[in-house]
Length: 116
Length: 114
Image (cartoon, rainbow over all chains, first blue to last red; front, side):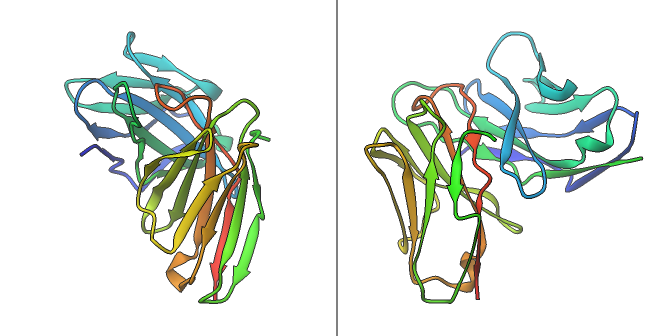
């Protein structure tokens, strides 16, 4: 069975500092990996995804994520945090495959708090 | 505006009642997914429809049902409601059935069962 772990319930970072939100996964084969962000009273918004190729993926709002196959991780990063980045971040994994439905599993979410 | 419309935004109802949540997917999207978000359970997949047909079931209770209509909008029916059903219910849509596509989420329906 596939699973996603976000080991930190909350990450606090000072504005202007780099941020990292951690995600590890467990799935057979080479997965599709996603990051979503949820602002208060809003639905999830897609940030970026890894399918194949370059391990460093760039996404919206200056975020990027690094795929590490040996560590089965897909950490979300940003070089300089903004107060407006404060939100709930979800990592998600989908196993590859053809034919039929491949379930997307979301992590529990990590609350990012950027301190002015 | 993500393009996925969910109504109503808020719903307060009593235990034992039945409610219907509605979702209109983003234009051109054929797949609709329903998720339940609660503080202790995170985001739980309930059910997926593709072009009118049920394609996958997740942790959906027997008291819950859903359907997707010919115009592609979807409804999630929750019956015999219990206090524990209080949660945010999200609908998401995507163009196709599978692959590496991302989902587009609606803003959710906050259900409070009292």
